Image (tube, rainbow, N blue to C red; front, side, top):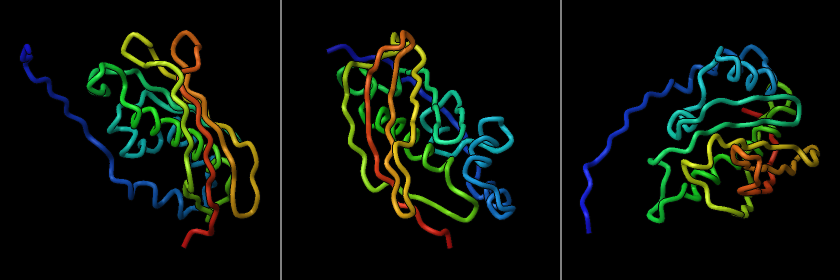
Amino acid sequence: MTQTQPRSRTFEWSDPAAYGPTIASGATGLELLQAMARGELPAPPIMQLIGAAGIEAEEGSVSVFLDPQEFHYNPLGSVHGGVISTLLDTAAACSVHTTLPAGVGYTSLDLTVKFLRPVTVASGRLTCTGSVLQRGRRTALAEARLTNAQGKLAAHATSTCMIFTAE
């Protein structure tokens, strides 16, 4: 077995409290996510941790972008399913967030993921798009689709989110 030299990675993240004034100002979920997409608010720490390349948000839909890197890999030499699941969960749940008025929150109740093809550095930029399928007063159903740079579907997920009044 060949030993390789360790690689290193350094990253920074922003204090999540930075969102407080925007939330306190009465921003809707869509306004909050669009401010992040424009760079007016920092990305959440999880997006900085995985090295997300950006987001786009519109009513009922969110896209998250990621350029796969070696540090995303599992022992088999492909992007770890947890990274893919994080993208799917983020896109699906944030698509629900875009439909919520100020003062209303959400949390994921479940996430069902189907991995359809391996994802590697050679896959190119990944696009993960979430869409709301149905939203009621207490729950919402959303899906997310992860495609590679060639537009091929690599993974799919559905998620149920619980909606609640933020306290």
